[in-house]
Length: 212
Image 1 (cartoon, rainbow, N blue to C red):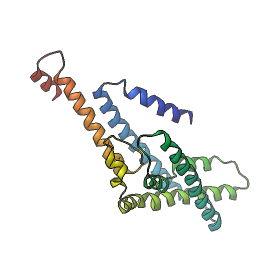
Image 2: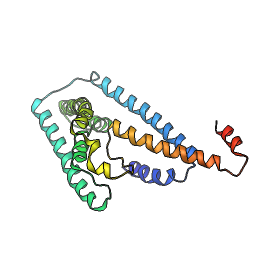
Image 3: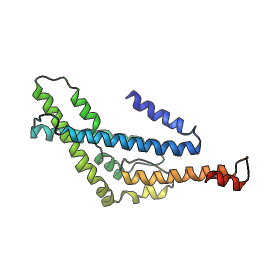
Image 4: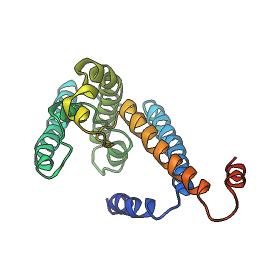
């Protein structure tokens, strides 16, 4: 948790102290590294299905899924309504629902289940099997249904979005992330291009040749 919050805070201040060219380079590099790491994590999770004997109890699995969904709802909805008191861009009920629905469980819960020291071994197998089932349930069902659900409730045409032209990244979904990412990259690229054209060294043509 310390590394997570340190990264969140430092990324905000570090980003604005980099040149526009470096900002673009770092964004693309980190996105590539994140994609590779995510691929390795899900490959490991897929292989783990066949890596140890499983113990399955349907009632335990159902109760765990219900409690996971309930716990996420208790976090998302009250905190979102609380944040709306301090935000210019309000989090709409549709956005809250998408944030709740698209919550995925992956490497962290599985890693925690592997480090449990429970005896007898059947208990560890039960926890591990249940964790894998929850991971598959959230990734395949909830993750696969997120984009169709967004199109169904038409979240991107909400009134809150039409009233504001500022970029707000509130969703984990790929479509919304790519939309805001393109706008941000376009802004940074235009800013960099203007700085190169208006630079003190050399003529405008020389700067354009250097840019190319």
